[in-house]
Amino acid sequence: MPHKVTLIPGDGIGPEITAAVVRIIEASGVDIEWESFVAGAEALTRFGDPLPEQVLESIKRNKVALKGPLTTPVGTGFASVNVRLRKTLDLYANLRPVWTLPGIVTPFGELDLVVVRENTEDLYSGLEHVVVPGVVESIKIITEKASTRIARFAFEYARREGRKKVTAVHKANIMKLSDGLFLDCFRKIAAEYPDIQADDKIIDNTCMQLVMNPQQFDVLLLENLYGDIVSDLVAGLVGGLGIVPGANFGELGAVFEAVHGSAPDIAGKNLANPTALLQSAVLMLRYLGERPAADLIERAIIHTLAVKKVRTRDLGGTAHTTEYTEILVTTMKELSGE
Image (tube, rainbow, N blue to C red; front, top):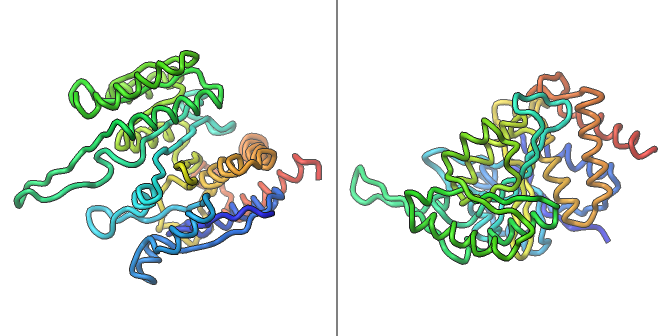
């Protein structure tokens, strides 16, 4: 039976990189029945809602989705579709594996770490209001339930993937109640996993340490806002948002996504790099139990970048989206002996 997966191509370059990823997955031999829906700016224009109900119904039914980048207006306009998706579907855990791809040279050496971000509360929820003209209040909510389950997710992930250490990142020296609760929950859960080293660091020190000695970290566990910022920071250590994957997990399903923007300035020009969404699709295939295909695609990415040295323009190359895609497909065939 084919896997049924909700597909959200997204805005800007989304349709181009999504088409590339679908092409590569099909070449891997995995049988997927895609249910494609628009969301974001295009959906707002067509349906009056950037996240139509049929999109949510499809994800609830299929339990898995692959999503391209969606535009979020800055300062005005509609609320983030990504935030609505996570909160509506209770996708409480955001996973961002970050590792150095062969052939991508950075000043930070070989790096392999994972950011685990709580996805449903904290300041990132956007709970704010005008108190009086000129004064705005944003509400930071941290709960024992959310903090405990994200800590358990991080330790379970670390144990399953053979990771050695989980570091909680916080500002409990200043926000003693909210971040203090997050840290307390982390420590209680850490006691249940004596085989995994646990420590914690203040957020500002963590950022400094990440650009001085990122190899000291293994799994980073963060609240929602800190996680949003630090996950982009660590992506920059390995070459940028164009090559790192992202996934959101809940009790009832998962959404795998490109974590970069919709890049409207290059939309339709066949210049976009599909690697980030493709790496997210690799995570999706492993989630679906299609590990051989996921491993093949990952090997093809590595071989194409490191050996064939074919890259899109954002990585210093000249390949167009479609050219890069077809070379990946050819490389997969070569690696599988076809």
